[in-house]
Length: 304
Picture (cartoon, one colour):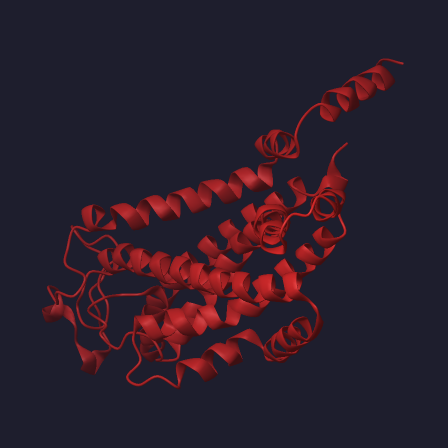
């Protein structure tokens, strides 16, 4: 009886709470979200403070005298250099810290550009329908039929010489069809909702219906998806840099670029690959955990 009463009381409380408030209350008790949020917060904090945290210039070859290519030796961990140096005698820890800033910038900018492109195409398809919807969605289907990394590489090789901005554009193009399809589906669901039908019956102009009623109520799933896409963007950007399609200037470090360079001595010095690869995995995991928790919490079907 006590359990039944408690369950009834909980349902009564939830019935008077908005979806956002209920989602936040669920997220605060969700260990998956908390772990993901902590990982993301640490990553963002380190990236923002990396110029202050890095004790050395990431491009300065201050340990070059300890690099012996004939014996395949690189600077080991030592005072002032807790992770040692790389193949050029540069401080590895400083390069990891500065590389976090580059990784964050590429991931965020690529996701934002992909989101903007997806919003434009999704809004056109969901609002206009008809032949416009068919044309946009067929183009989206073609892009989605190509593996994301293969599409990013195909776009990246079109630019010469490669740089960090070509990586951003290549990764952003990959994300556009994901956001477009999701927004289009949400807007089609909104098209026949009660508030949209009421606005039409009152003679509200179509443009106002789209931008005041349909679009704002369709953005929730898209914003949540952007958290998950950000993890994919970081991985794709690292992959492009790993393949040599990123910034050719290695004095400005990036995790994927560092991972690619380390392959030359992976057998003898796997730590050069371990640290950037570990950072990429942990950051992607953080965004994925947080995004999955957000998606579950904002799903009205999960309200109890």
